[in-house]
Image 1: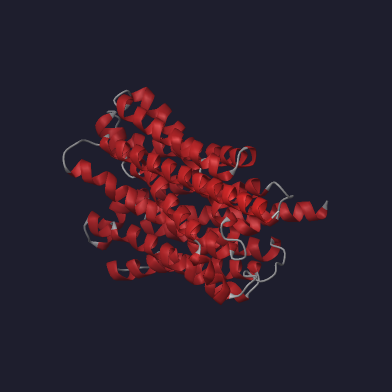
Image 2 (image 1 turned 45 degrees about the vertical axis):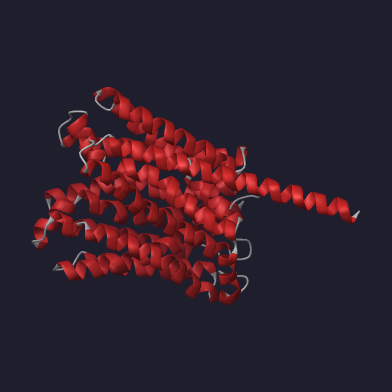
Length: 400
């Protein structure tokens, strides 16, 4: 009984860390004009802070996971939260464009490693067969950040000072660090094989296909989410004050979808859950383009898209962990890099037709296409697995 309570606290520690990471990743989008004004730069220049963080995630995920392979998992998580806390707090005291750009990059480095290692640890903190639920609890921190942390940070940034937003992230980092220190049980080394052998995982073709799947498939969500503000104001006709409420609505959907996705991964296989999730995402994004001018329908769909978008998080994390046997934490962290590449590529690709004059709803069409491509990639993986299974069966029969 005590062990169960202890494991629940350990999962809560991972969720608190996820909350802090989710807040720092997305709050910058809400306070971008405030940061630009304070540092006397343009909004496009301030957008570099988003790109710098994403680049930090892509670089840091394999790098810090690899460097931490000789330590026990709970110590690596503690070190990652310490790094996170230090550089997010320093971001609050940045006085110019260059210093904040550097701090944002350094703040992003532990993101992928924390979620990558945390996903594997979460799977070990729950009873056998319930690893999807463990991962969902960890990711719940990220989804709740969009409902509570980001709106609060945006409010502080708008009405007081953008520096307070990052100071709040630093405080959450201290809370997460303390939680990991006191509640996380001891684990063996992060790597069971050693870094040199861990790197052999990158020779597996299916791992790279899954990384591509994450980048392309989740890019569909980010193609829509990146342009949610002009969709709500310019297309649906709401005032700017409604954007914040719409984002909270999407965040509530993500909270629900996170746990629905975990149930899907348990009921079906992770790959089948991914196909179902991305297929639904493609469909609702197409519907979104048709009804976007209806002010009631757009809010309903914002919540629904939020649900569907996060049903893919746990299944895709499980799929990549399964494909990285022996080097699960390194493979798992790479999936976080792929999520951020999906963020960048989805926003960029969706912006192209808008720049060409096709309207804001064209972003949702791009998102539907990307999610549909994700379905095709996932289906291709399943077909390839069946081919290998048939070949192996024929070989066994031949030997008999």
